[in-house]
Image 1: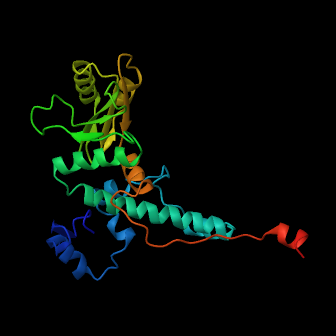
Image 2: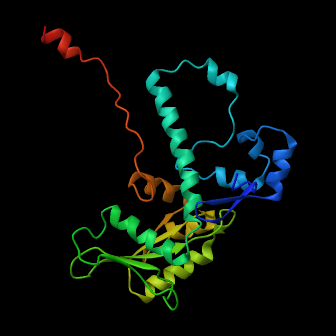
Image 3: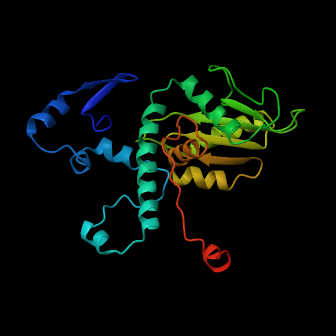
Length: 243
């Protein structure tokens, strides 16, 4: 409802109904996923998920006709839970200040194991005059190899285009760096991806909003485990050998 504009969150944990929300409430209609899909801003938000599933809605009758095993049903439910979690996580990430977002990105790289065992392995550069480099991860004790980071906390309806990647490549050249990581909350244009793929002097990895949310969930950054389910199967060896 926040992304659809029915409520607003002026501060973390505080919610206020908007004029559009009052209209929805007075309409008497059920405010569900189908209702929220009327709003373009919600559709843009809802498309951000760690999976690559199509955004097209399947016919419920087709789904009911499918015969799925309990494990397959659990897998589908798990994907839906993670998709919803990714959307909620993106909402929180977009509330961060630019400096907080840069620190979050550095923490994510450290959680993933980069700079493991190195003192002060990752740090954020100064917000002004950083030369196009937002953070640095040391990969070895002596500092011979480092990953240079550019972090763009952009609105979900924008896209990172080729000029931004060109600027980052120039910043890497200025640092005589060979490894760059460009992370954003939004998506990359085809031109940006093609330019990064064709670079020779530097290797630039692009992480978009979908991938960022997926990595945060995988490495438990900004999320915590709520419930654990054990899936068990028949132990054939027990019945054939142990009795």
